[in-house]
Length: 199
Image (tube, rainbow, N blue to C red; front, side, top):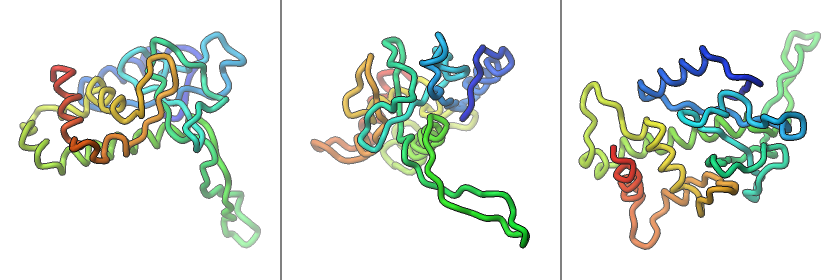
């Protein structure tokens, strides 16, 4: 959800909780530049304390973007790349009837959020194709995959941080988890995250 509201919206909150119960992960943008204008710098639904991944931005050198909300001790402060992102910018149609497409540079937590979603999808796909994980926790009909619960994916995201810190920025770096290090296979780290959450 690359959007945010100043105040909580009951209908959206209930829909998110229902989605969580059905094994649907929810991600929302933290907000841009609200720290300078509001006492509530994280917009809703990213401000929910549980059930929503609040996604911030970092630059190409993994530093906390200046337009993010401040770090909070009681939040994960997860972030993905959200600066100097290049993409097409469709402009109004020309007199010939053809759309004019030009490249443009984007930035913001609204762009960081779908990148975090893509990283979660990568982990889900890896877990489905990894034989040791499939054999260890076979998914039965009518049951939710462990990695599709907020707690488990949050634990995996923590393992994708170089060094998770409670009151600082936590860039999500997939290679931290997926590269083999010290004879520890990636699937072992995922198993550990699932075990630690008791699911």
